[in-house]
Length: 503
Ligand code: NAP
Image (cartoon, rainbow, N blue to C red; front, side):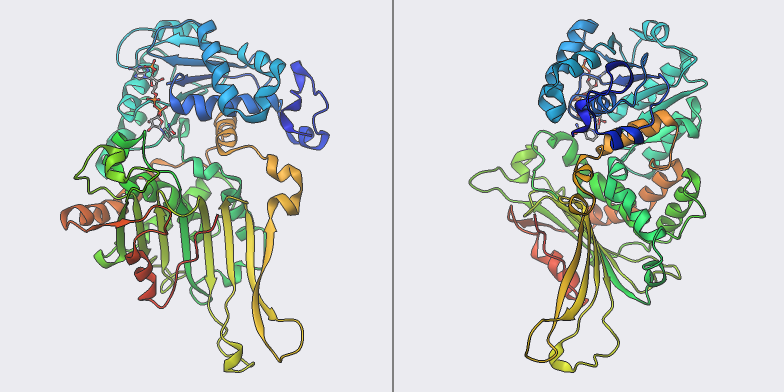
């Protein structure tokens, strides 16, 4: 039974899956203000995520969601705007007219100017200072500071207030530090939630479960047994529609500094003593601080070409001379006892062969083959698939059945979550649902701490400068490919190869 089918409490569970419903812990009524509540991110992701949590029965009666943006409209007009957005972006749940009507009733709208005085008193008067008040900054980064300042000035930064800050969090170390200084002038660190939606993905959280809830892997999780690790985040889309932002950021700032870095930290960190926000983030920070500077030869940058169906990168961003990368591959080294000598290869890009994100932990070959040279050399590979088909594969070597001697073959032990755990595994909350409810619950484990963000910039800044100052070439690649040829060479020269990007 789908999880949108019944809201516990006020709307009552209309036959909602009992098991799923029993695991949902409703949170006390809260006020959530979405600054930029009319924007693309709010309409596509944030409000649909809230809608699905409401349908799941996680919000108690009295909870309110307030859209706040510059344009003038009343709450009724806002509800109509969001009704359309739900129909377009909230999936099958939005076909339940009663659920949509019920959810829209908890919405309000305030016209506000983040850089002026308009709307601030109205907003303050609307909110209940006795309850959790969360302020989601779904606006351009230039407005993060002005919003924090005005919330503080108008008495909305105290008690149970918290702010959620979208990416990009700065565009280099000094701008990230400046932003942290501004935010921490008005809010305390425990009130600031820097969101990286990758951390809300079910498989990313599963990474920690796989590593720290199983005895099997941890003894092998080091340079003695692991040959190398590959992290790939491949997209099929281009940058059309986001060109102005993207051409200033590029793949290094837009993807490597945050999403890939977070995956790298989770895969490489030491076991935290407990699963608590600071214990986890302390360990992630140590990984970032142990990263070696990236050498010139260890970076490959690329830019997608156009084809008969789609424009190329330069056309997409409207800049015929652009030297910004839409693809980046890096060879990274962590200098600590666990990982010295085990390179980690990162790769991300737009308009690639498939939309696929995965981490592959490639173990070393056995030291000696008792089956002779003809049996070949084999290795185990643990693949953690983030998307699509979230799940885990462990490549094992076995004897090929039948006659013909000891012929060895690699086969995956495949645990696709949807198959292993049943339909419920397909019906898990998306990253934004999980993260927004964590904000309300006051759990910062899956959010980046200020020192973590600054350390990530401190590591990538020199690599970006290297690209820009030494005019590291941006190599063209065909749409639908795996990126520039040189990215393959980055691994070939180490006697390794990338795993195929498969849908
Ligand atoms: P957007 O579509 O341009 O929306 C911007 C929103 O900000 C609108 O609601 C706009 O209100 C409001 N706004 C602009 N100036 C304002 C002011 N002075 N006072 C109050 N409200 C103001 O942007 P977006 O794509 O939703 O992105 C929002 C943020 O999320 C950005 O930081 C972006 O980098 C980040 N982000 C976006 C995505 C995505 O997929 N879109 C993904 C990751 C991160 P009006 O419409 O009333 O002017």
